[in-house]
Image (cartoon, rainbow, N blue to C red; front, side, top):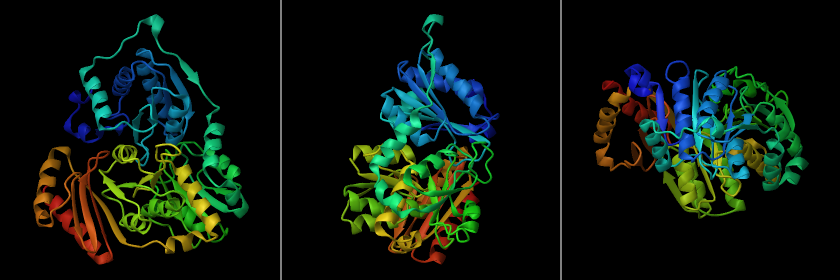
Length: 458
């Protein structure tokens, strides 16, 4: 069982990391593998209580059943939340003071994929060392095996949304938001936030125009919040005179924007927009990763706040946030976390803070975005078999060695007018190439040059 029995093609489609494991259902993410990973996690938390929730993917029931089998066999008491956004699963781990959680969601990946996201007792994803411990247990196969009279039990909880929304509303200036009476379009992509966005808007006094708001798991577009997937919102926002549009990932950790003018904005703008507002509320260290727009650098400098850059990946970013006692963290994929609320990337919090900013500043979202420093960013990805990643990254390092690049996470080279970051993805068999510059042509040329190096070797 496990990856040792899989062929090379299968291995390219199964991804392990500190945050968990993900793969294509029916090819690499099998019931046996899922159960073994759940056994490993149950062993890791020493048979303590575990919160489990999932998004709406068609494979969710199968994955959930396999997770339950593994956890119950190790004696864990399972708190089942059913279909639930990932940030709320993380929130409830802390709220219920349990040993950990498992979020069954592949986030931005398409419907073929699913994943187990492992959550520690702090309500955030496992750090590198915790993740390695779970992997060691998995590979050893030395799981806790409880007898028939000591197996775990399942407790279904359906009362958690009011608790979460109460806490969120207590963190926001709800009076200002309700007073603005915004009209908002939201597209949760028929994912875990479907239906919950209604309650969210009701609490904030917003008139909701929902799109793809049924928890069916039939994704009408890729569940990744970026301009290419925001066409439905962009096509109606001006005719219905909405104030802002929000596009969510299937697990509701990520969010991107559509302005009142109909512009589908890059997901890179979510964190800088929230950051510009939040640092006016509370100053302190800011954390982002090496692939996030320079807008973050500029805004942190404008507020005289230190900026710390981590490796790419939510686990790295969030644990850097905690260890550095940062007030906020975010990435260029449309994610924001505020540890004062809870230490997880949360689209509901991001949307709430953006609405609060609009209400307090009494400005349209398009006007607020115009206040941000704008750069030109190019994001590309190149398929790369895992067995060729080492050679590819070695050649990239050699190509840019005179720039004295940052090598802690792939290769990042910096120029006066921008930067280039080339790194192997931890979630897909890809090499990601991101370039940003004051000049669009320069960003494109730098990205194309890196792509040509990679393409020669695969």
